[in-house]
Image (cartoon, rainbow, N blue to C red; front, side, top):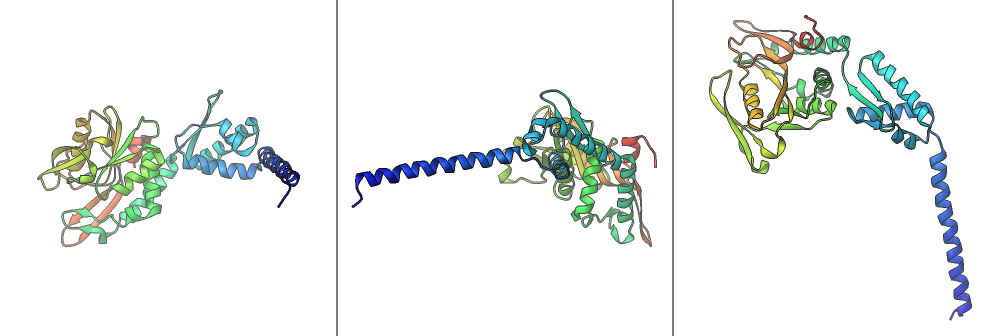
Length: 312
């Protein structure tokens, strides 16, 4: 059986080695704090972080502590990143001076990049095999492709870059990927308008609207929890023919006492004689001829004119 003296020696040893272990932990933390990250690594990680947090103010203090670097060095890094985004026309980095300042990245396309992206969309849509009965166009494969959604989302974010937007709205189901992509680049939530009741939505607000294409009364609804009074809403959808669905969403926004900022669609038909909405931006315009030869002719929509003041 150990003596009392022996037990005291063991206890003192534990205390001694415990203090050493604690000091080693503090030393490791100090070393990690003091250790600086190379500029090349900082630039990569800062760019990644800004892209993952668009339209969010990131303070100099945050980056300084993250990399163990002086704020002056971080400011120089941000200047490099800002110049790079400007050169490639992929985003606008705004730096805000002062103690509460930092940097905010707004992803967008320059005019040149927007023209290229829309030309790519036109080329993808310009295919006679996409013709559907009633003058519709098959787009489901496009809105399921990450590369197309990347372009469409950033194009829409470009249109509303200088607008005060709180929510992106779409109607189920084909508009959902487009709304999600646009909302990601704007760093805003998106809401989905339903065509029928879903018990998981809770209490809803519903409106009746006239379908622009088939001239029938339909109903759409939105959960009361998803939209606040005074919210600024951007509406997006995949295809515009008669405009009944977009007009219905505009009515729903008014029911919530919210504000409609704008409407944007991936493609619109040029064959509609009577359009229920006038102020809508389209990326692609489609002429679908339902004759002996089913043909589709795609061309740029009114995006460039509406956003950059340039007609195509």
